[in-house]
Length: 319
Image 1 (cartoon, one colour):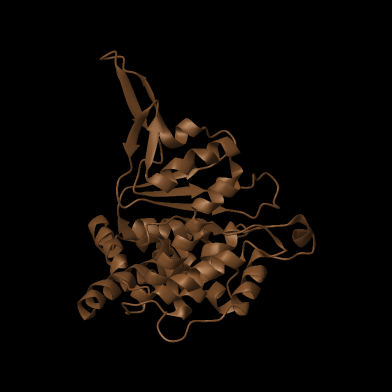
Image 2 (cartoon, rainbow, N blue to C red):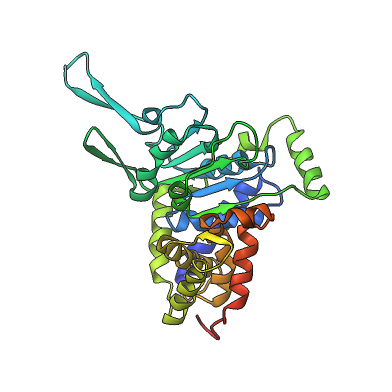
């Protein structure tokens, strides 16, 4: 495990430090984003306008020596703009595939909830299976592949709520929040300079290094107790009076992988109960659909999930 630490920690630290040049005081959010990257997952960054959602996603993309495309979602974006389409070549007279904007290693889906549900659904296959199917032909995505989506809360004008199936495809959801006064002063100092911090970012990691990092996730041991704890957490979400739709088995798999990645970053080769508890909220909260009565009372999925976790017995020792 020492050899693994010597490879993992310097790489992750370099990514964190590079992203932090453009994103001030959001170390937890940056680490969650890197955990999703290690787990081959996709991230939904959800918060009010102007807190740095797009900046954080773009900073990760610029830190990786991978192909990158940005899709600015608006109501007029069509599914073929995202996935691509086939057309008759004027030279050969044969059908030719024109790749869409999603055919890249890192994809920024900016303001994803400002496009129609039909266009949002164009991402379902590619996020789950890493491929797109156009006119009966399947095209695999390059690896590593990650979708970083940003959205404003659905109670803002001009947005379309993401459907449940789409939300379940996101490995975790991150909320950035407003900065403290000290952090905002640091933001003002950096962005008042002649050159923006985003313009100075350079790649610190290649695609093959990310693939090697992803392969190490399977080396992290998760005991029977750990798997039982994860299954218990997701199971209780399906039987709460305030929850209309609980976490799916996909959520259980994501939670266990996130706990493994959390242990990996901590330099351990085994999962602890604290890893599972820490990752439960960002991994599961966006997968819960509350009842109309609970929403009318102002109850949040995070509150419900936190209460449920507190009622479960925690495994002792190594999970």
